[in-house]
Length: 444
Figure 1 (cartoon, rainbow, N blue to C red):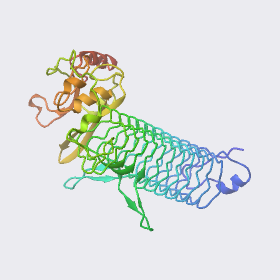
Figure 2: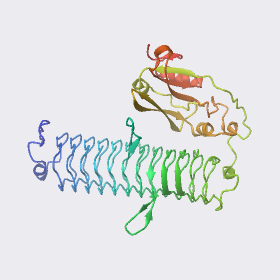
Figure 3: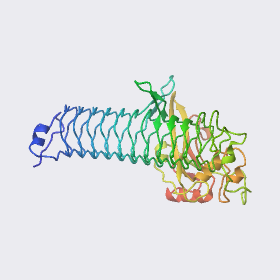
Figure 4: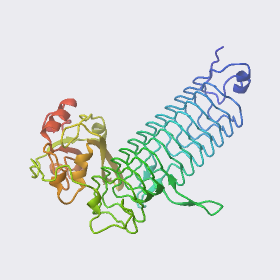
């Protein structure tokens, strides 16, 4: 049985609940904008690519429903049951899912921006490559503010959030123990201690979670990281008070990181640079307070003698672009921009510019290996952390730069400029984007 819908009408021709009761389950691409479906029971319904913009689904039973690619922007899903539902590639931006049950649901590649997930149950849910990024708003003559996606008190136990975009997210008292967060971007995440009605204090729970290559840059987190895998995790400029007992922080990136009050007893800090970090009232891997040399737990650097390292100011090759859209359309060789060997992560370079009084932020992600990022952020003994294949020493001379520049007599007109120190990477980049080795993609 097949039913048509009219996109110009606010409701389908036949009431959905009545047709469902007659045994029909296929409602793909139905138009249900602003529909009132509060409390309906529609398990196993197929609403793939349906338009449910601002629909009222409060308390609805949509367990095992197929909502793949559905538009649920601004929808009310408070207390809804979405157990085992397929929400992959769905648009949930601005939706309210407070108290909803999304256990075992699939939200891979879903748009979750500006949604509310307070006290939601996401146990064993799959959020691979989902976008739950908050919004950093910069208004003219006003201080910048962050509109955060709210996952406070959410249960994400054993959930798969690998490679998801959770920038600026609120994880206050969230439960993420044994979750998979490999390569997940948690830049600017906030997870302050939370005191419940009984007076008990709760922190975000990352116990046993896998945060390999995750980014907690500029995050402000009080959390339980016991036995977590934090190998190569990015903690630069973060403020973290954590219980890191028995956690693996090997090759973690630390720069001006505030770790006051953290417990690192029996943890692994191999190749971790703590010299620029604040360690007041911390307990180190030996269970004692930090000594004058907190890096004694890091072990030998990869290249203790600086063998075959030629440290000199690199020569850059520049590529100029008229618009940011041109730059965003570029492809980058899948190798580290510094040593041209297999990459592990992306380094985000951010630049800001004000045009006509309106500030704007631009970002570029470039592939790096963790070793090259380590020598890039270190201030002393850099040679010990460099490989003979590295083309830039880091610091003020990174392997790649992203800048906004004006050219000649054009004055206030800005261009987007990418510069590479490695000739090998330059040739690969130019060939992959059909660019001259020197010059620009556009004519001026």
